[in-house]
Length: 176
Image (spheres, rainbow, N blue to C red):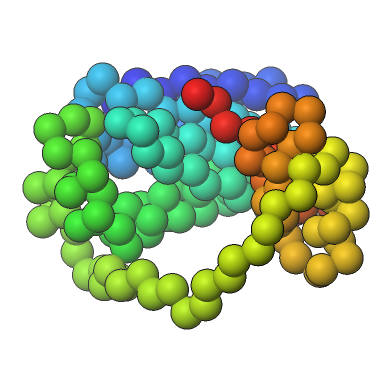
């Protein structure tokens, strides 16, 4: 696995680079050597944020941790990614047969969480009315949800607006 480390509002020291390489490198046993992992370290006020993204075969593994200590954040992000892999090992191995992911590496794992079956407990249908992004955010806030799906009046595509952890909003647009 190739690791790309970048920093926002922080200088990546050799000690930080070594810690990230060592911790994220532990995930190497799950992936083939041609997979790239992107680690972004940043600071905001007194928060130290580590975000690791591992895209492979149309799947994206991602974890973000924020704490008061950068080294603690690095430790936690590795644990979260390993937990995600462990929880979804069967689905991941079925989805990415023959590329990027080593399904046999799970035998090396000690202990562990069992995979849970996905269950849909509620389904809704509603009609789409084309609207702009501001109206979609307003609708989302009015219904009290964390996300809202709508037809963008400009592009005629289905989009999703969502509320981010930092209080701002995000927009998901399809890329064809």
